[in-house]
Image 1 (cartoon, rainbow, N blue to C red):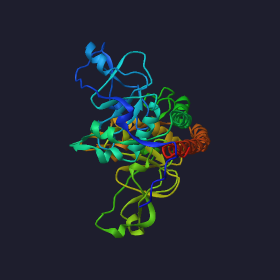
Image 2 (tube, rainbow, N blue to C red):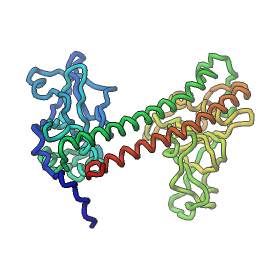
Image 3 (cartoon, rainbow, N blue to C red):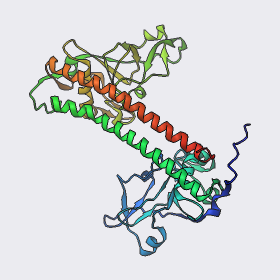
Image 4 (cartoon, helix red, strand yellow):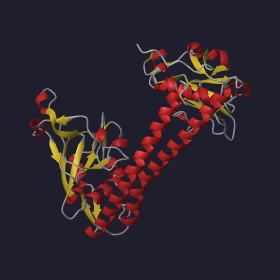
Length: 401
């Protein structure tokens, strides 16, 4: 077993309970009150240690509850109860425009700010969550788990002098801002193609431009994938990549690299398409995944969750990809719900969209190809920013910054 890296001489390990002034659990409230107090809940803390204010609830509160459970700037919110993999999410409360309380899924940590910077504590707790420390500490039942307050306060935190904590916090904050900017740029880029498509062609459902209507079967040949029997291992090998719905992701034009491939024999039991076919997720556990699309940039086989649409000669592949991206709500609206959400091949073929002139399709194709080159750069920049932040985060508490 490798010995841990020794801390710098001015650092020491201190039990959390010795430098936390109070550790208060929140309160449960099943009631809602549109004029009540904002209550922080599990979904308001992200896994990367930030607060999410896009969706919050209001609950009725007494003055006694407000006095006991209110949050003030610098309070550290530790998510003590959640699913086992999410117990331990942590964020610092940095203020709001009105009073805020917190639910019983949190422990509010108020620190001795003469000895401990709250942001330093929150970043350290996030590292412990990433290292699955809390998953090993928690008590589990059914779909939830919880970390006891005493177990949390017993943990020992590597504690440098306060100025060093503040220096570390400043470095991590700068790296965090960079990765969030890169992430935002990527997210904005993801909506760009749809905006361009709608600007050039309009909505494929309402067709305000009066384009020629066309069923999907008139735009391309539709094939449903297949999964060779698992009982025949000879069907699996290294002959051709085998794509599943997990390989069709929102932020990528083409399907991601699959970890599984078929043998030459397995290919005969499956379906395959070459470059320029649109892969559409037609079976998914979540309705939001139905209609996800990717444009093949290589020859691939694909499973039964996917239908491939190979465009006819008078339909450009990039246009067809953009058309399916914009028409995803229509695809989802024709899916049936059960154990899975499904749109059958026959239903997909009968969906009515449109077919503009090929010359206009080709103009859109040029935009897509230019955009994709830029988007690849954005994805790489976001990946590098995330890697930098995680590297700094894990070095920070070993005296490595």
